[in-house]
Every structure is written in C-alpha cells, then in structure tokens.
Length: 209
Image 1 (tube, rainbow, N blue to C red):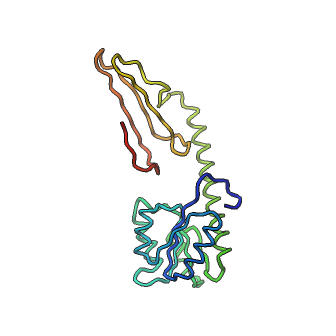
Image 2: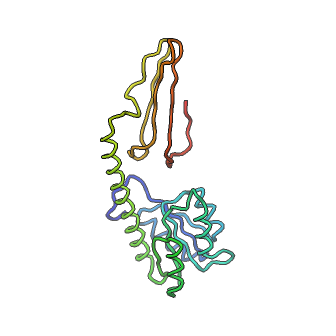
Image 3: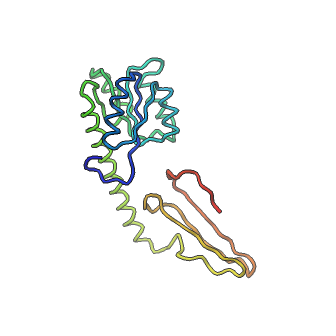
C-alpha cells in the first residue's frame, strides 16, 4: 500500500449494482494492496458489512430497491458497524446529493467519472489519516497508562499450594485497555481469580480456560 507501512491489509467493502464497474474498482484497490470484496445491493452490502467488518465501506448511491442513502442509514442504525468510515461512489455530482451524503456522516464523496486512480488515492489518504489519528490516540493512552502507579495485570500469579497458576495477557494492537486480572487469598484453602474487560475489541471469539 503506497506510503503506508502496515502489517495487515485494510479491508474494504465495495457496494455497486454495476458488475463491470465493481470489478474495475475491486481490481484497482486489490492491486494497491487492499483486501476488497463486493456486494451488488444495499441489502447484500449490509449483510457482508456485518460478516466482513471492513475498515472502510464504499457505496454507490443509485441502486434499485435500496439506494445508497438508505443503505447508509441502516448502517448508522447498527451499533456494530455504524462507526466504519463510509465513502459514497456515484455518477451524480449535484450539490444536493453531496450535501445529503455529508449530512449522513460520510467521510468522502467520489464521482465515478473520476476513475479508479482517484478512488484509490482517496481511500489511501483516508485510511492513512485514520491510522495517524489512531497512533496519536494510542500514544496518549500509553502516556496516561505510564502515569498510573497501580498495576492492573500482575507480572506473575501468586503461589497456591496444589496448583500451578499462569496467565497470559496481550493488549489488542498494543493499546492499553480496560483489562484486569487479580488474585485474592480468601483463606488458606480458597483463592479467588477475578478477570475483567470493560472495553470492546476486534478480537475474534476465543476460549478462556
């Protein structure tokens, strides 16, 4: 991905009912290092957004059954995907359409006739800016965490007769969060382990033993 050093491919969902144009833009985005999937309608786009959890959604406006504005509105109503950055891709450049798009909280607007190079450039710039904002926020969180004297995850569990205790903790993306682990000796025969997580992450479901 140009000018972006990443250990992962940014995931993009492209929603357009024109299969030829969708393939063209998908090819251009994939060539630039993005992981791009397509949907041919707003209904399909909503389902794929829920399953794929993309880093960015690009949607056409003029689509049958559910247009881009309607698709954007149902995305905004879903807590799981409402904060995903959103770009409108359209053949229309009328001022009212552009203003309606920004009223729906979109990140950018691309006219189809601009071509795939403009779309790729805008996608790259948008994701780069988002990554820079994230890095700044992470840096501030780390500074705040460094100022907290209390350790929420101990380096080692206590010794408990008859048991071998161990734990493993890795903050998501290296970002300090709301995780905590603690051990309490209630009496000589009882030790209580308390685990907590008060921040949402993008980990896949796992198993806690």
